[in-house]
Image (cartoon, rainbow, N blue to C red; front, side):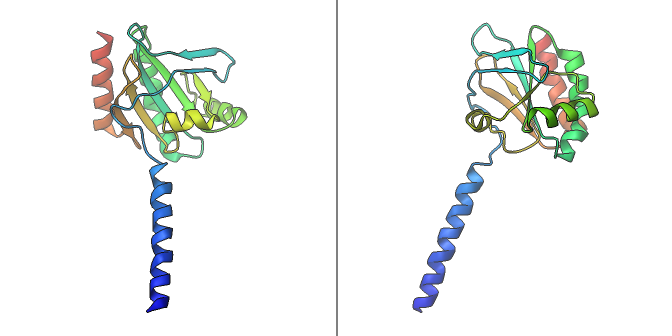
Length: 169
């Protein structure tokens, strides 16, 4: 019986560690507040994402070059960027790869929106960038309004388009 207790204690600790690790792999959550972000995109242009009353809503895209679902989403992301990039809606695309790998992916997939190679662990955690892909709508004040993780099938594309239509009026 002593061995069984020791084994159960071991299993309990292992399961607690797995649960703790899994909690770090969360998608963005509705109502979550994200911090301001200042960085350079892959072309070296400054990107300053400040949130506040006079800011525009932001469509956030998280992707990874190693993610096949991300690649399937890119035509839709390009389309909505072309259709909705206005002073009322801004786009922020974050890539989990280093600059060279991200640039190659952007070129290969003809991405038209600005992309930031996100390597700052603090910001990756703040923007829940450990699960790919994610598409999220951020309010002018920096609150997550809606998140669409994973593949963007037709019904989800329609939801995103409807949300962007309501903002662009």
